[in-house]
Length: 99
Image (cartoon, rainbow, N blue to C red; front, side, top):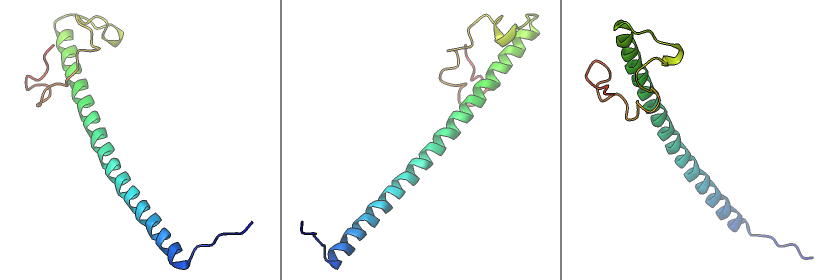
């Protein structure tokens, strides 16, 4: 079987194309990494705000003379599903928590 060879110019052109494609992939991955970091920050900040809101609600409920069972079972509402949408722009204390 006859072996096929490519010219040096063709080889250089192919390597340049591969290098260009790899560079483009790296740029795309860097952009994706930045978006993941932004989303991670958003998730963490909203989670923190929701936890603060739930703590304020639990403390207010406790101050009214009602005890809290483990994991908030004695609250007059279900904690799950009540935090959708976050606690408003200003977080707790700004009127952002509405249940």
